Length: 146
Image 1 (cartoon, one colour):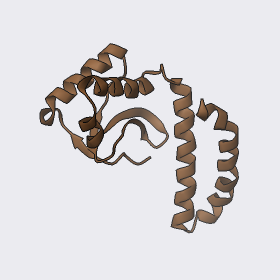
Image 2: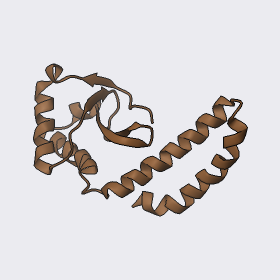
Image 3: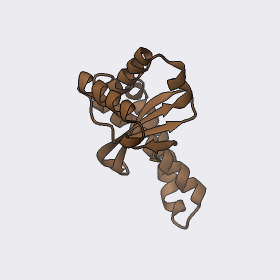
Image 4: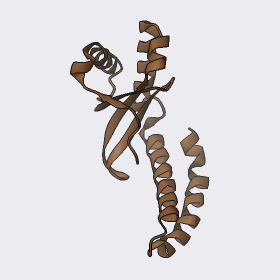
């Protein structure tokens, strides 16, 4: 899975932001965020990317849009952070739904990549992926929406 877009901030570049992130994380007993990215979108999100494709421990990314941060009061921004960290804390949908979402996305990305690259081995994998991806999508749709 690709890393989200944005400029990665270091603690020394925005110490007050990182202090707020630490405070909110402690308050909701959420997992640590390894990367804080800033972009030009009017949005905030959290992204979890497994270390090794679909496997391994998760790297947590917090993506903050500068326009959103500028538009919110400090209290509103704190609430947005708490909401986003709630997605990671397991109190907002649980770990299984997050895993299903990532698995569905990973299989779709594999299908797209095999289709685009057209390597010599594509003819071996593409029929299976064309069958399996919709099958997985159909059977996991309800779980992913939960």
